[in-house]
Length: 323
Image (cartoon, rainbow, N blue to C red; front, top):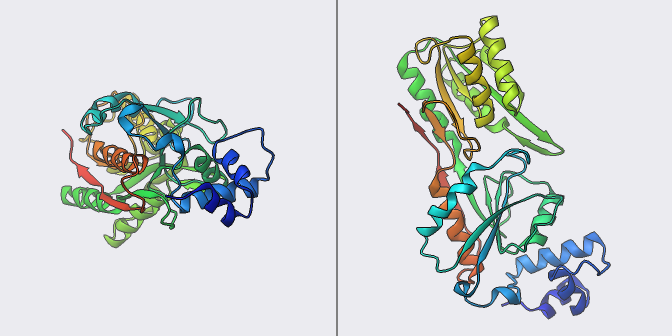
């Protein structure tokens, strides 16, 4: 087990400085570079803070959920309210509490581990490292082997969706989706590009049927209305996210378009951020309960000191044909 002294030697600072930084002492004055160097070295050496060196059943576990690029702060992450039942399947003797965290606001309580969704900038990674020593990244594009990761094979699900639509014999296939951009972070481009490539391979791509906007419900509504009114709504459409789908399906209902008689719909679901009021349509499902369960198992192994080496788990997406 790594010690404060080992970290101080590698970071070229005093043991006192390392201890105060790792214990989140806000009164200590150190540069951001030194602070980040200390946390980086501590993670690489698998340092375990003293408060986490006793059995987990003697305390409760607080799990932070970092989802700010996928779910805006004003929107509820409905998955968190349903995770209590999931934790019971883990045979964990203590209590597990979930709390959403943001990069610019320290958690209201200390978190023992973090489940982080999507890509993060270097500055955001620095913040996450300072919140917890145990982090599981889901669908991160980072290539290091310091943290545990769960990566979704979204292409497999999209292949199944294209195959399904081709077998149905639809004469045109399109896409309505959003892209989130903030600094160097982009969300939504991979699914769009992959879907376009698969359609090109099948000689079915037509740019008139691809509608791209912001990753918002209102944009899904606007783009679907525009597609219907302008005649650029394909016979079958992949809706690229939960929020886009909610807006697009509202537009379809207002225009009295029938599903699937007039337009076939396939939903691309992320982490099920919205409780849909609509029936179950064919869905490329990305984040099932299995992914959350696996993330929790990986975190508990790290928190309980049962494993020090980082692992990466690959989980294929799949098409659910709906009702």
